[in-house]
Length: 221
Ligand code: GSN
Image 1 (cartoon, rainbow, N blue to C red):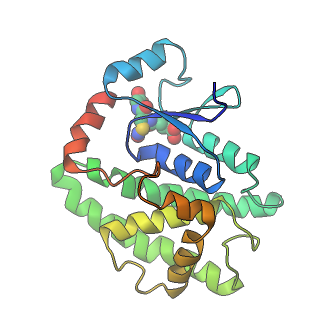
Image 2: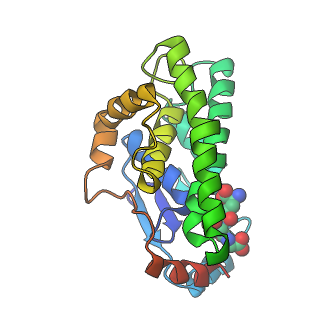
């Protein structure tokens, strides 16, 4: 065993992507085991590796962890990306949960049935622009600091950058009205571990293409 965390998922973003981002930001190398077909998922279940029969699953520190949030909480705690006290952690949790909600909207868009796509697209851009991004723009404006919480780098900075980049894939000028998010994006992208993750060839996954969708669907349904 290499001692590196081992990530079990399909070769795409989905719910594993925030975990990949967090590990990369923490400077932790990881291995990935990709499910190609339904039988791969069935085997993991039969082997008793999936507590609730679902992935993401991450082998880390002798555990077989499931549940995206639990996994992210563990990594953030272990690598000191989770605030300095309970109140900072509470704030980080609120921001992170909001970003998880937004992530769900953006991440699921490619998998939506054709007849609901247009409405989903309009809704996710509306929520991004009018509900979520204004809050983070205001947070940065009000405290005038480089990072969202406690004037130091935390998991929520990582997750906001991930979502900004994802939202820009759908609407390239989505930050037009958010000057502080623009500078935040530039600043966080320049942190060495993140800069590395943003380079081509990293374990960061692309936006799924139309042709990838059926392959993912046949694994889970
Ligand atoms: O966040 C989590 O890890 C869980 N609350 C949800 C995990 C989940 O829904 N996993 C899906 C695949 S990833 N995509 O959404 C899954 O394993 N589905 C199969 C099933 O039987 O639920």
